[in-house]
Image (cartoon, rainbow, N blue to C red):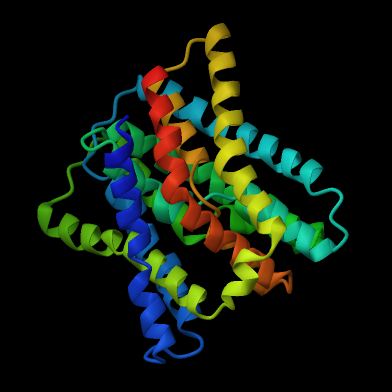
Length: 313
């Protein structure tokens, strides 16, 4: 895959954070703007993005096998990176900081950024977008279980109902029957759904810009743990995932696009959910924010470099 074109596409995505940064710096957005916008993102735009990614896509029974592989690997690869991160940050003395680093190391920006990035890098390939949506089912379930545990270390904080009762998963559950039955959604219905879904990427980047404006830049660049998280999430995670996938492919042949989808997803920067959980459960918000922001900035370089390996898959 061409480095320059991928670099430009990823750069365009990250540049979308600039309006949020300047609006917050000039005080045109209030103190709690990021939280309000995050509600709009989680409860409106992302669910509609999930639905628009499934509606009016052709379903064939042969896809079920690949869907099963995607869900299986979504769980296995996340667990693999989670335990790798725990091992890497084992020596960290500050418990809250260690937990934030582990969470940011394996929770990827699959929903807000994963689907739009897949659409930009592989235009016209609906299979890769479908695999990303299916991946989100397993990802959201693990986010509300293992993600909460990673931040809190308390199993009692885990609410099993959240595995299903979260907006993106509910949206997928609503859309799947239409997808499986190949029901054609009228254009008059699809248009507003697509409009609302298309807000996901710019809205998530604006929130990122707002959070960057609220941070002291020194805390972003002088924290060694933040760079280590970036290495685990942006380099180790995708390369480890690709190695496992290619190894399995030697034993049980996998669809090429399944491998590419899982590889690209694993290269996404840290998810904002790690920061949200740190805020909700009184974790190390500063480390989580710095790691998430640094990941998103550095992915401008790491994603284009990693995508060049797609030609070898």
